Image (cartoon, rainbow, N blue to C red; front, top):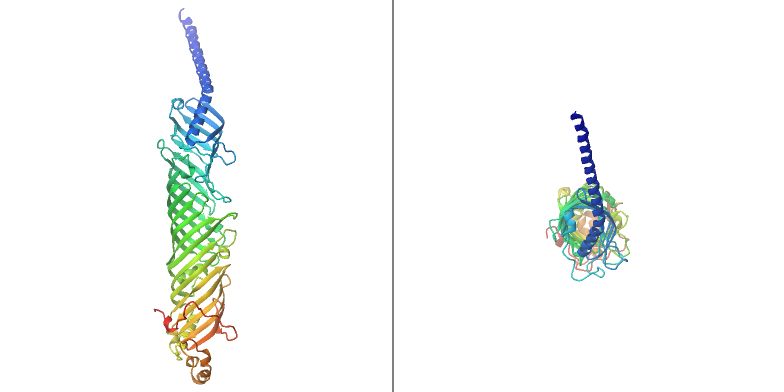
Length: 537
């Protein structure tokens, strides 16, 4: 009879245990809720105080919510750090939303250690050096908290310009992760950003910090980067897919970078001939205005090379930046240069070229060839025309200028020439103010223009010959020309003739120009004799 009464008793005890457990859970939950509500203001004040002390700024916090189970988890909105007392300038830091995890004991006693911090809508405005308004003396205190990991996708870093009217230097990081190695130490970071122009993906790793409260622009940064699939066709007039690798080091206001670029299909659209362009560069980025100084760029394509030094800088009131470079070309081959800038894949000339020039490319949505200016001087040694017809004319000119009237075997002669002059490229037209051309027996001095797009020639000048007019032919013509010899002899030359070169690159026309006013001789230095300009001298 005792057995039936045992089941109700056991069931009754189970109910009591369950009821007690439920009451305990409710009590714990209530206690946690009570503690959370009580700890909320405390944690809020600790967060604000820690941020204020570390970054020496006024701190605003719109909202903070806290939960304690299974570990401390906090979410907040509207965290803003401002320069002391300044609401008329952009805030130092603004965060749309944030969340973090920590141990309860770490929040109640320092130093606070936060396991993971997530930031959304992070924007950082770094003022120029020496221009942080009302900055306190003595710097910020050592941080009262350690953040082990920060995830801040979508971060925007803006380094404000020192010069009024210039745009800030802006970095948009759509992936950003930082890891701390200890208080007062730089944080390791890994970031990805989409470069705006030219568009391409930049992946970078390195170290950032520690943050300099007195001068945020002096905060150290260093690392490595890769830049891939940068489409150069966004710049009118050129095309190619660029990749780059390198290292950088410095502070936010002055970053030095060293690296390489590789563009297998670099093309000027005016020619349409792709070349494999490689460069090695050292640059300095001025964080106060985003200007970049190239010191230098060593470039190579085909069998030629050049060195460029200068900068990419903005001007007040002008959108975009101007490229200004001093360019030294050589050792280089003239056929490589011609392939780069002329439409034909077959160059009309071979030889060794050297040049010094000033390159200027202003901003603007205009074809590079039409907006750039290039001015300087050049020299081509041992030049030889590949066009059979043109080279034959050069051979004939050389022989007649030396008084050789027998053309037998002339086509087989390996006549080379020296070509040099001053030039200016503007609006797609190459203007030569002084172009000299020397072959054995003759020296030609020209001025004129060449159209990169039209390939039209328009040159006028003089040809100085070692031989007299009468010595350049035979028979009755030679007798007749003896009368004219005195009129064309000048400054020790056998004859000085006014000439012109017109037509196009493919079909040049050479001729005398007796009715045109003679081009002035170059008075900067004595005109050399044709003999003195023989190749190899």
